[in-house]
Structures are given as C-alpha cells and as structure tokens.
Image (cartoon, rainbow, N blue to C red; front, side, top):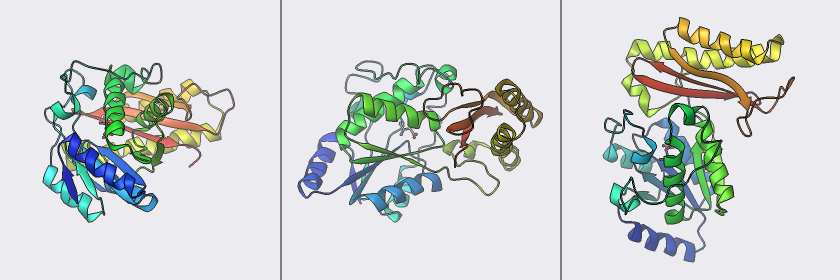
Amino acid sequence: MQLFRKPDDLRAWIAGQRQSNQRIGFVPTMGNLHAGHHSLIDLARKRCDVVVASVFVNPTQFGVGEDFARYPRTPEADAAGLQAHGCDALFLPDVDAIYPFGAEQGVRVRVAQLGDILEGASRPGHFDGVATVVAKLFNLVQPDLAVFGSKDFQQLLVVRRMTADLAFPIEILGAPIVREPNGLAMSSRNQFLDARQREQASVIHQTLLWMRDRWRGDGQTRAETEGAARDRLAESGLQPDYAVVRRSEDLGAPAPGQVSGLVALIAARLGSVRLIDNLQFDD
Ligand code: PAF
C-alpha cells in the first residue's frame, strides 16, 4: 500500500492510475478504523480497480467543546487494517495540507437547509466542515466512486447533495450499518463507553426497530411515536437529543399515511458520549 502525506504526491500517483484507465474508489475517514470502515473498503474494492482511503481528523467539523482533541488517533493500526483489506493507497495529510490558508480561513462549502436540521441544529457548522473537507478531498483524489457509511445518514445525504450541486462526476455509495451483536452501531466513539454502557446503548437500535413497527402497526401520530421513543431512551438512562421519523430522501416530514421511503433517526447522549443511529424502513 502506498502512503501519501503531500497532496502533490497523491495527485501524481492518481494521474498515473487515470492514465492506465483504472477506476478509482475512495473511502474518506477520520481514522480509528473498525469493522464498519473496513466494510466500506471491501465495497470499494468490489466496484473499483484501485482503492484510496484518507485518514484525516477534520478540525472544521468539530464545534467548540466537542471532542476534536480527544478524538482517537491510531494511524499505524489504521494503515495495517487498510492494507489487510486490500486498500492501494492511504492519504494521511496534516491540517496545513488540507487548509493551506488555516482551518478558520479560506473557502467553506455549505449545504443549506439539509445541513441545518437535526445534527446540523445540534452541532452548528458541523456539516459545513464535512462538506468542505469532502469537496477538497474529492478534488484531490478525483475518484469515480466514493463510499460512505449510512450510520451517518444525514452526512450521506449532505454529501450526495453537495456532489450533485457542485457537479462532481462521482458516484456516492451508501454502505449498510455494521452493528455489534447487541445491535449497537459500530462507531469510533463506542470505545468511550464501558461494558455496562455498551449494553445500555443497545436500546437505541431497539427503539429504532420499535419506531418502525409502531409506525407500520397502529396508526399513532408521528408526534406520539417520536415522544414515546424519547421516553423509552430516557427510561434506559440515555439523554435523547432527537428521535424522529423523516423522509429518507431529504429528511422532510412524512406525508400523512406515508409508509415507505422513511427513516427513523436517533441522537442521544450516554454519559459524555453522543451516539447517533438510524433505520431505513424499506430495508
Ligand atoms: O464520517 C467521517 O468519518 C467524516 O465525517 C468524513 C466523511 C471523513 C469527513 O471528515
């Protein structure tokens, strides 16, 4: 596996791949890779001739008081895992390489509305940081296909919208959520949970399943379903931020009687850890 720290070196290698008509798959990450990330590499591997991953803890998507400083950084283990999954190149830039005018200066990409609700409302500016760094990485890597996990469902929609609106000729593939045996969605933040909290956190997935079944079942209103879901989370010791049913296309409110094309999304705090998860009703 090739390792690049400088954008120019990555670009030169990519140019060579393009000249040999290689189809390029890209998996952007913030590192601390787990089985969920490896499944994205495996998907890219199946669909492309060469696979590039990036590991970059992006400062602009963290708000004040969020966990940028303590975000786990494990580059050696990440590189070993990527290599084991057949990744061809790892881009490991420093902050100056991505933000040559400084992380607080320079261009910002903003996906209005879609980036302002739910996670965007709880974490103002978060999706501006995500859209900005993904646009920069797309310009550097110029992939044919980019793979994102659907655990960050709103992020996936924001990236799709940004890609379409800025006319990047890139296919965006959403990969299925990888879960622990108890249903907890895999996340780098899970390592901040102790064994008891990991069990406690499985209520998030159970509540998503319950929301889906209740939605299909007994004609409760959306407000009743969402309120009851928040109660379930709170009764299990979590502090819910939101538990909602939305259209999976654009996260708008479902029409009365709508049963397909929906997604339930939950964000909740357990101790100091903020967890998110979702369930698409059509899956
Ligand atoms: O999902 C992530 O790991 C990050 O938000 C991403 C897409 C790599 C952008 O920094």
